[in-house]
Amino acid sequence: MENPELTLTTQPELPDEEALDDIEADIPSDEELDIPAEDDDTPLLQWETQEPASPPRPHSWYIIMGLIAAAIIIVAIITQVWVIIPLAVLIPIALTMYGNKGPGEHAYSLEPFGVRVDDKPHSYDGFKAFFVVESKEQVVFELIPLQRLGALVTLHADNDVAPEVMEILSSVLPETQPQGYFGESVFKRLKL
Image (cartoon, rainbow, N blue to C red; front, side, top):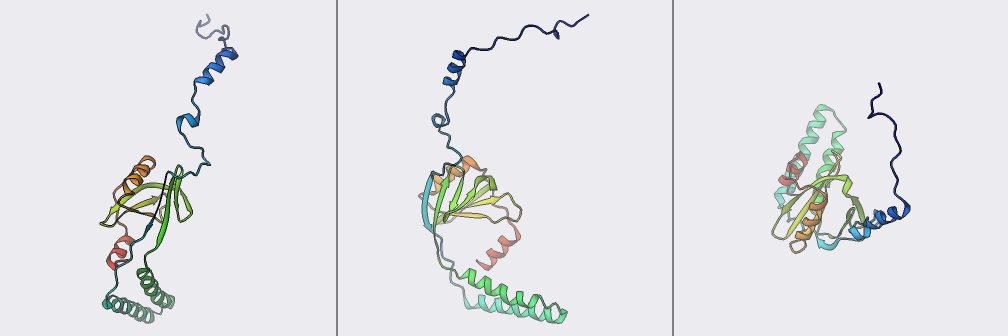
């Protein structure tokens, strides 16, 4: 005996072209929904701000850096690991130069599909979250990359622009608390 539910019956009636036109007319377009096109790079928010200058270093800071480099060189000579000697010289020089950099003027732009820092685009798809660091002068937004060893993208914002930046970033990325990592603690102690 055949199951009546599985028997083939007549095909359902398809809507005529006029009914399809009515259905398509009821579907709003991307423009009506205010959805930007993927190639739309019209900025949602643009601003320029100056990165704060690092504080002047006391003479003891340079002496300590020199002593650390000398100790590493002595250990490298004793253990005969010659590769470490150039590193022991170059790393303190690089940290000193990086620590003494002056304030820089940066242009920022938040766009529908990414962030632009000094005309360098960064897609939101490359970030998993962001966190906020506040100070008296500025609010700093740090975008955390998806790649484990990727570089943070930093957005400096004056206090008057920060609420708008927060609103836009919160709409595309989750906010998280800053999680310490080894490099961060080293940079904080060296005040870089």
